[in-house]
Image 1 (cartoon, rainbow, N blue to C red):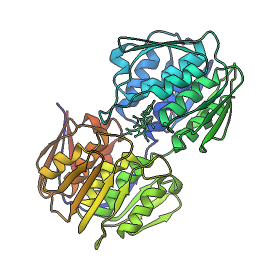
Image 2 (image 1 turned 60 degrees about the vertical axis):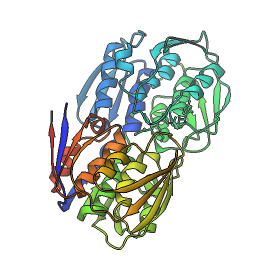
Image 3 (image 1 turned 90 degrees about the horizontal axis):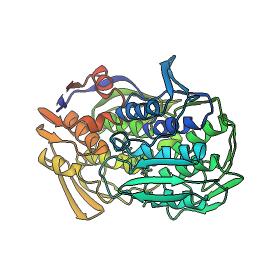
Image 4 (image 1 turned 90 degrees about the vertical axis):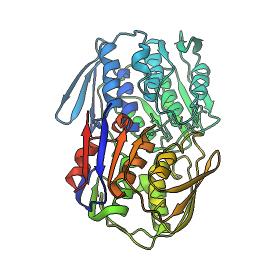
Length: 417
Ligand code: EPU
């Protein structure tokens, strides 16, 4: 079993470059199969979720070359095969092949997707959307068989602005006849990134980034080119690390508008930073004030930064609270944080209280999900002594080259296979 070992309390200075966003890239790769012959995706992060998606695409007959900073994807020989369960369960984003293959072939067969165990994570909104477009969905023993003689554009109202459902329905609607209107769509930057790829391959998409998105179906999408946006969650994670251990730590690749809610909370806590273009510079801050955080859909405070910021809250004098409104099982990291010396209490299913400041001590911990892993890794960086993080594969799912990035700025951190 692989592990990360950290010797804590090292000051961090130098520059960290932010990679392409995981949650954009994992949608852009499946979206590329809409293209009749080829497409290019630049700035793809080096994370294990991407390796699994490439495996699925190669299984479907795509030829993929990694050169000149981009993934060059040839889809001329794409086949519509049922996607094997051992591949689809490796990550959540395998569900994007539902929308993309349905648009291209009118049929798709795939198992229920995997992903971090942070809640039930149903996909009913995706399924209802496919059905509204005219597809029939059969579920046989965890396998989804989705078929449509013809997809027809229509108006779809989402019960909840789900990121995955918004993207999946945009993909399916690309292959529909006429115009699809999604109401109460998600507004996360990932949606805008995917829309720009679709537009680049010839599909008319309007309103991405707002609550209403319109997509005109198009028969011949091709030659899409797109840059993956910088990862706002990775940016946020390193900013939090900088606030705890930085000495003029420079984080390059920031899009201020994507991390607005985090910056507002850092202001409230009393954390100082400077932004110059796409570089944010931050140093360890003192005299921090406790805060109340509530996770929300974009532009609210992102659930994916809730666990990383919990570790920061353990260092603040007073009582902070976190209300998690997206997932029902995203406080699992607090068990090990407490073992390291933090005082966190789960007050109700979705409310956490964090009492500080607490000195953390290195010990053996186990990662149970990606962002929880990030929270423990941050704890290891600030703790006295050595922290050993087991099951660190979760962290590598979402943080590109994290060991190198942190070592390069002065952290004592090693990965053991
Ligand atoms: N939901 C439903 N039904 C659906 C879809 C969603 O009830 O059909 C619920 C979910 O159970 C959850 C909420 O709606 O409670 C939000 O789900 P959403 O569909 O927006 O999330 P997702 O597409 O499954 C993506 C990211 C997550 C990120 C969320 C929210 C990917 C692969 N995953 O998940 O990323 O937390 O959006 O921003 O893009 C992570 O990176 O650590 C991560 C978990």
